[in-house]
Structures are given as C-alpha cells and as structure tokens.
Image (tube, rainbow, N blue to C red; front, side, top):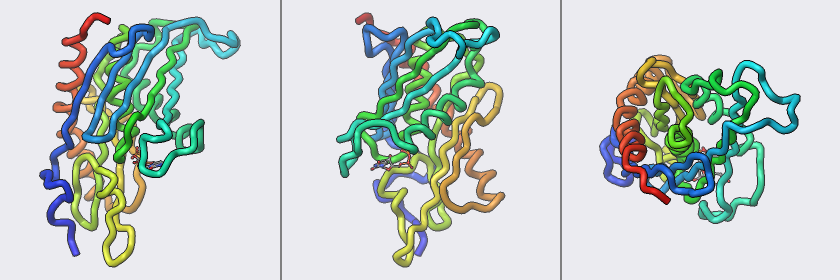
Length: 235
Ligand code: UDP
C-alpha cells in the first residue's frame, strides 16, 4: 500500500501553514515565534553577555548555547517536565545548525543564550525551533551571513513529503512503522547544509531528492522570517 494522498490533503511538497513573528518578548534581547501548522516554537535570545564561569569563555568568538524544551502539555501524552536525553540532543544539534550562519567572532569573550520552547507539538518541532531561533537571533542584532531555514522531509512508504506531521511520522504499512523522518537545515545563500538527521531508512538517490526538496522549501521559510523581522511591533 502506497502513501498516495496526504492525511491532511496537502501536496507532497507543501508545508503546513507557516507563521512567523519577531520581537514577542520585551525583556529578551531578541525573540521570535515560528510555526508549522500545530507545531509552534517560541525563542528568546539573551546576549552577547559575559560568560560565567569565566573559564568557559573563548577569546576568539562568542559561545552559542541552545536550550530546547517542550512544555508538558504541548503533546497529547503529558511530557515529564525538565531536561531529557532528547532535549539535550536537540539543543546540541540546534546550536550546530545555527552556528555556521552567525558571525560569532565579532563578540569574543561572550555568550549568546538561545531558549527554544515548544508550546505545541505535532512533529517537526526541532526544525520549527531552529526557524524561530533564526528570527530571534536576527532580532537580537546578531550579524549573520545566511538565514538558516529548517524543514523536515518524510518518507512514508516510498513517497517523499515536505513537513511531516505527527500522523505521518506514525505512518504504518502492513501493521509496521514505515515512516522515515529527516530534519534538515539549509543555508540558502551559501548552499550549505548545517543539520541533517535521519530517523529510518533511505537510499542514496532518495537522499539527493530529500536535500533538493529542503532547498526548494527554504525560500518560503526565509520569506516568512524576513517578513516577521520587517514588521516588528514595539513592545
Ligand atoms: N513527542 C511526544 N512526546 C515526547 C517527545 C515527542 O509526543 O516526549 C512527539 C511530538 O509531537 C514531537 C514528535 O513526537 O513533535 C516527534 O518527535 P521527534 O523526537 O522526532 O522530534 P521533532 O520531529 O519534534 O523534531
């Protein structure tokens, strides 16, 4: 049985509705919100600021620390509050996805803290978080060489789709889980990939298609991020 029609009726290359806002929090140095349908992330950025303890500081560049977390009631089955292996991993890869686009060498001896909070989860939250973090970092005035755009690509059976929701992530064929979920962050200007995580199986040919799909999805994501940054309201 093939996945011929998406559960929510979207085209295979279509994302869910995306929404983006910049400058949502008064006391943060920068903030932003990004959603793919019912997956929503808000991000606050603090810094560049002094590093404590000081021995952690880097004389050549700012440290970038990301903290990803999901609110307990962001998911159907209450998530235990506090950090987990999953949140530590996502925090780490989110920092890795953002770093190549940031001119951290302009702020030696400092740290930039990025708090990524998922307020509602319907899969693809790490990519929503990265897109919100891009907005928040730009809103904080951190100079960038590129605008990271992250999206998930899924393989349901043999069908490749853009922006996986939870129902698709749980896709089964013949009673067996048959979904592959790939989180990708691209740097469209420099044509680089700063995140690629794959959960499942895929052929090298399919992976090439997946990467192309991510690059094709990026302009629309960047457009929303830029619009949000241009339409900042005073708080
Ligand atoms: N999820 C959940 N409870 C958890 C962790 C995840 O219900 O404790 C759901 C949530 O909808 C999340 C999805 O599983 O978006 C996929 O999680 P994954 O770890 O693949 O990361 P994501 O796709 O959100 O980046």
